[in-house]
Amino acid sequence: MPERSARLTARLSGGDRRSIGGADDVARDIEHGLVDVVEVVKLMTGSDDPLVAMRAADAVEKATRGRPELLEPVRGQLLDLLEVARQQELRWHLAQIAPRLELSAGEADRVVAILEDYLRDASSIVKTEALQALVDLARASNRGVDRVLRLLDLAATSGTPAMQARARKLRSTLLHR
Image (cartoon, rainbow, N blue to C red; front, side, top):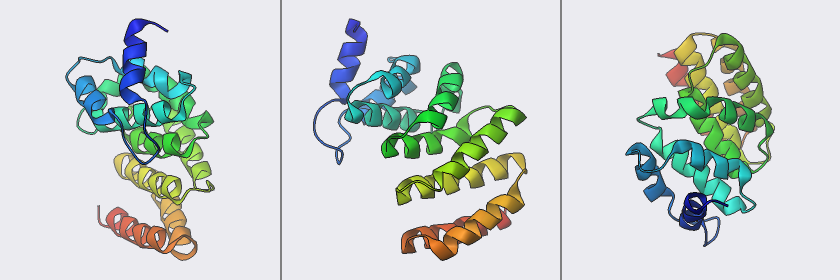
């Protein structure tokens, strides 16, 4: 492991799933160009430590909230990871990141299909973030709104109480765009 990657791994290691480790600091460093987003995305896929992968995803998500253009060099890797990720923490961060990607129509269709699959995840957080991403994508493209509304209606009647409430709120925001 190259020295730079080892230092980054060390910053994101330790603790347990309830802690974020150095994710906030890494996110700030990505935003300011001190850490290359490519290196952090590599840790999302190449780390044997699920905590490092989770925190790397958290850092990328946080760094790109206001700077989605930072995702362009890793767009392809993120699309592939979105499809194959099984770790719930990766999935929910990828769902948060997906609407920030510049997508062709075909890529958008692929992402929507993947996010719809996320709605069958065991984690209610993954499901909720997938719903949010589907709403964000529909609002941005004006495509698939009716389909997303049907998914929100289903979630508003079949999810956990928190997910039901979120689905109702998302439905309202989608209808009043």
